[in-house]
Image (cartoon, rainbow over all chains, first blue to last red; front, side, top):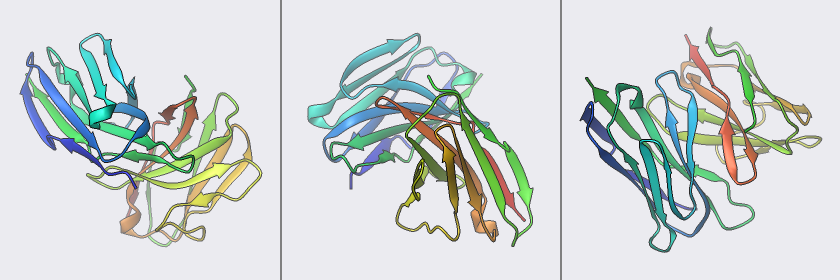
Length: 110
Length: 112
């Protein structure tokens, strides 16, 4: 099955700093999503981005499908950005399921 | 996007007992998915539940331990049976709208 790696595993930022999170995947994918899991455990959809670039406020994401990676950019970070960021992919076969990466744990300190 | 309600949101249970988690969606969906997230870990798919048929379980998960019901197109339950402390996890249900997956708020289970 598809392998998904995320880096860095942990990140501590000062409020206001910018960061880039990376997701690498081992095979072609049909779907790729970024999620934020808040400290209460809820998964929040950030981006559906199998290819290309999208922006939503202080967050943006870019997926280069041919090179099998995706990047999530967080600008002007806030304490509410703290939590775990997951990349999840789904392969191209009809029987493929959603596979989650191990996540990046982000702590934004005032 | 679909609104997914899960309950309970959290519970503390005695070992050897069972807990049933409910998942309600505000629209009809063909498939519903159940995930487990062990402490400090990522999400792992337990099973896929189709209405009118038995759930399909992923490797490492069995029906006797995690029985699933899917009585209609908007509702599903997951039971965690004969619990042990190793079952302490967050359990999440999920649906797909087109290519996107959406999740309920999760059930945080602690087994003592």
